[in-house]
Image 1 (spheres, helix red, strand yellow):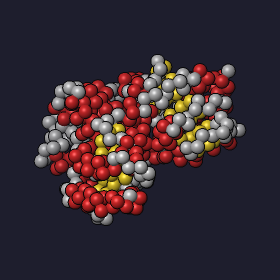
Image 2: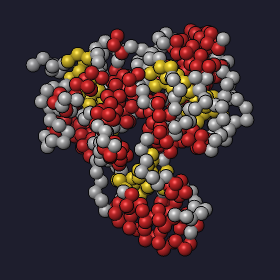
Image 3: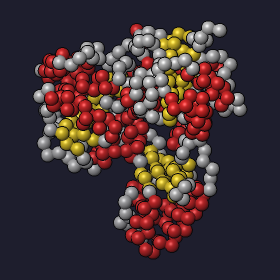
Image 4: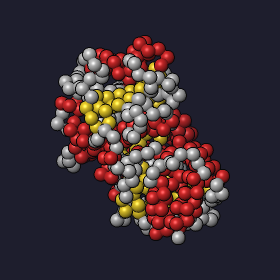
Length: 481
């Protein structure tokens, strides 16, 4: 059987490598092989271990299988697979033809697709009988949203104007009007500026009914209903801007992509955080690997009566506490905060105190360095960094309403009469917090977590975030007086 063969091959491969590897590797390989053989829907929330530790277990059954399989991976993960996992399997004699691009392969093979490629292939009805294999299920909604996004760059306006001579003057006027509105607006803490339906309406009316629109313009015109939202990314220095339009619910807009095809979805998210039913999962098998409750408690420093991020004294409090936390540390410190101006100010202030030890979103820090970064950057790059001795949370990972996509989703939930904070923002923050502290678990010595956001201990919903961090133990002070 495929399960036994995959188990045997992985055991041989791990036996030839130094170290015992991830403890659930053989189990995952057998389960993935069974799922591919049965062509069913299987979810594997992985509660412990880095992705690099279990990728071989996920990939090996796909290499051994003879079924047509589409491996869905972001560009960073594709690079890793091509540079590490696939060469390692090839060196062990495990080889399967690899196909890339949006053209359907002529024979069954391992077809590597980006999320954007998957969207294009499925919408053009070229996916065929390929089963799907994804190792980034915790990011799948975001990745598919990016894959469906319509992006209008400055050069696309020139192409549109050249293809529609009668509209040239009107297009120039519309572009200049939007440019004045966008480039004269002060930048918020987010690098995106919302664009209302009223602002887009004149352009949409101008293009309605036109044929042979170039580039992405026809797609932009087709996705004009309220289930999509738009924003601009301005570049004031170059006096230019880009227009982005994206669905509010990327999974729902691709409903049916998993119908009548198998799918294996693995990722570092909690079982209670699985929200992939909108894709059309058919009675999925959910098997959690790893038990966070059996891990050692995470030391948590979260003093009471801390200021809120929107208070005047918060910046000074953040700098003072970060200074205390970094002093005397011989390992890497990670400081996460999404507020762009505050993060840049904090980086400069800490650099004035600790010099070249401090970096902003740098994957090659000094051994006792301090890396200040966004939440998303940490989640995407933590595997490229040494395990930190501490993770310092400047502000909790609650999505900001200044982000146009977040604001549009909240408005849609509000119109439906739903509790947008407790139904979406709070569970999303719990999930991101769990995934962010996962690299700290099971390390010796145990890294510590510091949360400097006063809302954790002062708001009633803070207890839900504390529960998501279990197991943890309170650190009342950093060192004896």
